[in-house]
Image (cartoon, rainbow, N blue to C red; front, side):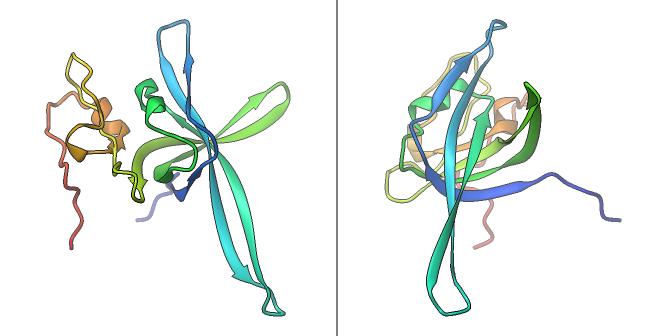
Length: 148
C-alpha cells in the first residue's frame, strides 16, 4: 500500500552566505537561499533556462560557517508552508545536505557527543538531521550507502 510522503531533493547553488538565527529558547537555525536552474529548448530550438529560488532552513546553527555563496549543494528535506501577516511562505526544511563540486567539502555530519567537534573533520561533509538527534549511539556511515 502506498502512502503519501513529503520529500524534496534539490541540487543547486547557494545564493548568499548562510546566516544563523537565534531564538529566545536557545535554539538556532541556519538559513540561506538556493537556486536551481532548469535548462530546456523551446519549440523553435532556442536554448532557455529558468531559475527557481528556494528558502532553505536547517535546524542546526553550526553549519552556517561552512555554507557559502556559490557552493553547489544537494539538499533533501520537506516542503513547509507558513503563514505570516496574511502571506504564505514556502520553505524547504533540510534534513540532509551534501556539498558537491571541487571545494574539498563533500558532506556535513553532526555528532551526538557532548563536545561540538568540527563537522568538516576527516573529509566527512554530509549533514543528516537524523544523525544530529540520534540518541541510540549508532555510528554514522561516513562512506555512504551507495551500491556502486
